[in-house]
Image (cartoon, rainbow, N blue to C red):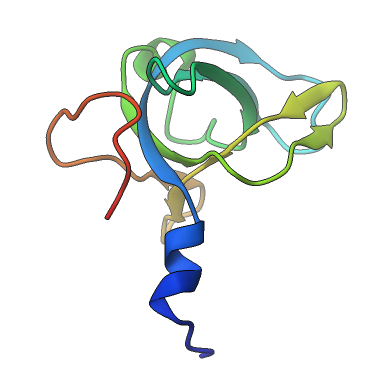
Length: 112
C-alpha cells in the first residue's frame, strides 16, 4: 500500500450532505440511480450517478445523510454529468453500503 502525506489528504474535500432527490438511471451500463445531494449553503446541490440499487430504494435514500467528495472534476456518465463522488463500501454480499456520519451534522461539514 502506498503511503501519502497528510497534505495530500487535506486536498480531498469530503463533506456531509442530505439526499434531496433520486431518479432511476436506465441508461447506465449497470443498475444505478441519479442522486441529488444538498451540501449546504456554500456548495449547494450537486448531482451524481451511483450504483447503489442493490441495498437502497429511491424512497429510502431521500432524506438520508451521506458523504461525498466534492472537488473531483465532473465526469460524464451517459447523459448525466456527475458532479461529486458518493462514498460507500463494497458489501461482502455485493453492492455498495453508503458511508454516513454516525450522527447528523450540518450539510457541508468537512471530514477531518
